[in-house]
Image 1: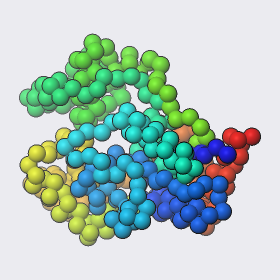
Image 2: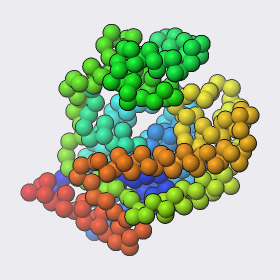
Image 3: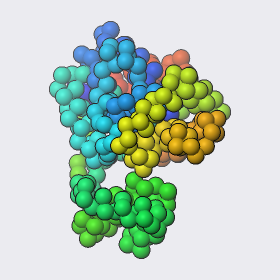
Image 4: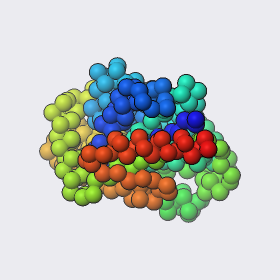
Length: 321
């Protein structure tokens, strides 16, 4: 029997971790084709050490009981990419399948899921010297000017990247500087291989957006009560991090960082953090609705666990037939 890979997707605060842990417990009790599970995080913020509260990582107690791959693998000063995620996840999925353990990939970073399933175009690795030069030019000219430069080089990429998105502007300019070819030209080339074998894609989506908005607001306030501001304060006190790093640009972290920099009050930062999280969830939902072969489930439904297990059993049987 083939071992499927479960893609457990959904917007922030939709209950993905809860369902993943319920699945893990059910499978560990026996009665399924698999010897156990391998939980793998698909979250661009949870890869960073020291970013626990604001990224909504599972608790230390949960991680001790149910270890997750691709959590706490990087320092916040480092960058992580969809290409690196794909390489890391392919290894973890292969190891899980070899041991007849069900790989459960859980998270909300849609680009990572897509890179794993479909592969990526070959792109040059990041170059520290080129990035340093481009960063210095951005500090002098501003990111809107760098975006205008990108528009002159690669209008297609510039149309897809916002002028206030330094990470993607820098990467697109870096690709051109290293290869002499645009990002769009690279993306048009044949892609690297995606994940083979059966894949089951489950999307958690509350039927009413107001329910999700309320959950987002409640969770942000819970994170503040748990010490989110102190977590960001510790990151800022290091002295080697800055607001343009991918880690610090994560939703919630960016707003509290700006408060600690004296740019706004704490109440305003929290309000903006909640709004930014809702906007992020809206983008995640838009992406989910465009995802092919996705089974949408109401996370509050009493049969969510049973429905997911049944989808997995069917995928295993069909692939083996």
